[in-house]
Length: 241
Image (cartoon, rainbow, N blue to C red; front, side, top):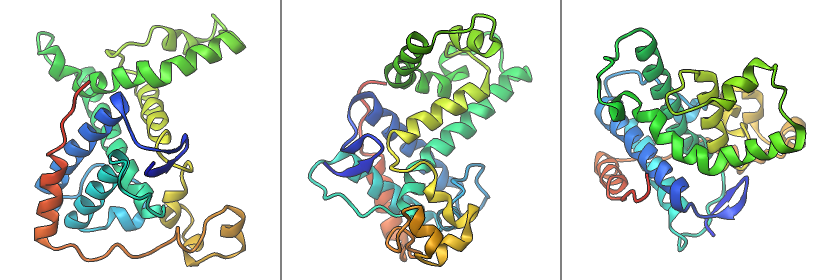
């Protein structure tokens, strides 16, 4: 087992692995192509990761991808930077789904456009949603019941990959991300609560945030190392999506 997650120490498999591979590959493509010249439209809210150089981000993405998928790799010590790295592809998916929906609602998408392209990112999330999130929603419905008069319940009940309700998609992406992350939002520590980054003070200890978790060092990554990480990320194959 290689990664400490909300669902215990494990490697990613099946649909979950395919989603993460695809998301990392798409994210890496934007970082590799635009990261040096433009401010990217997706952030993790972790100041250290978001301000890292493209080569550093590519190296970290490749490290996390390999550790999450290769059982032979020893479980790394979790840090806020590594967890921000894991969240980064999900932040990218949120940005793309929002862009996709805004384009559709603005009428920029042609009615006869290729459905696979028009709903590309929502379709990408649809199978993971059905496999991992929908069963939990159905269990909750059975346990607590559904208020048929509730507008939101009606929206969820009729939910499909063609939905333009970004809030529902936003929640789905977060739910999928939290299957991999150990603790909900500790990785945002350097942006949301900078005082915690000063070290294991009384508050951080109460929250279980250690000095080891609060590392402030990413390390220098050369152009050659960044290029190698980019190529290795794209060597992974997707089987089920």
